[in-house]
Amino acid sequence: MTIPQATSLCIDLHCHSTVSDGALTPSDLIARARDKGVTHLALTDHDTIAGLEQARQAAGQVGLELINGVELSCLWRIQTIHIVALDFDVDDPGFRAALATQLDNRWRRARMIAERLERLKVDDLLTKATSVAGGDVPGRPHFARVLVDEGVVRDSGQAFRRHLGAGKPGDVRAFWPELDEVVAWIVQAGGIAVLAHPRKYKMTATRLRQLVSDFRRAGGRAIEVSTSGQSSGDLGFLAELCRREQLLASQGSDFHFPGAPWCELGHIMKMPDGLEPVWHHFRKPVVTG
Image 1: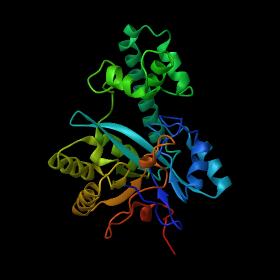
Image 2 (image 1 turned 135 degrees about the vertical axis):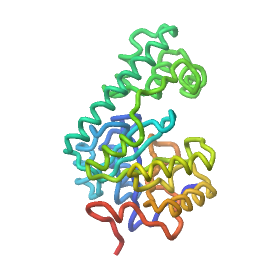
Image 3 (image 1 turned 180 degrees about the horizontal axis):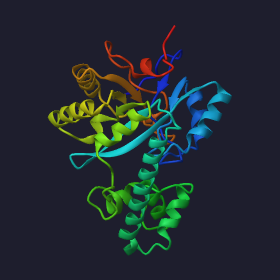
């Protein structure tokens, strides 16, 4: 179960807009966040900061504090891992070059997904998926939407079960850089590298501890202790892991679309006591009182 934070300070450091695989535009996302009581938000679209300027303008109009964010994909021991970058310099030339590389990687993957699904006989599949993505790089959810619209499948769930999910033709391994390289990009840009949703990787506890240890040695500074879809057991395990590795604690809803109460903006399980929040270490620290 998720519970709202205190209304005086509600911090959500992980969410997505239509610029990547979310359902709301950056400005609509900001409006919804404010309606849900969020006071500080990081927009963390996948491998792009294209939505930050629109989000910043919208945030200024409603009195919400926006923190620079992006969710970067990388590889650790051949497994795809997501790293959230927070509070970085958006004008850092090295970081912008790295994001351009990530964008190229995403387009290569999108083209390969479209090629693998050619047997479904959907005309201009990549073009249609790109349109669904608002002109940005389409991901598997966008391809699923096209398959539904074209009558190939009944719904998005069936699209993933038959064509896009793990082990299916559209499950294309991405061309991501290694974890230590991605962390170095973030550090170079003056940001904080956060290991995103650690329990969603379906790792054993031992393997996850190894990941967190390698992440810290690479320069990672925080892990998401509280995020959507977690049990209280997950929360306690990650809190202890955070303490053990002497990392900062982050939190975020990982919001993608309305209508999913388990993944709503600002509704995050309260972090256990005794952890050092990542937002205390922003260039403009977020503190109570």
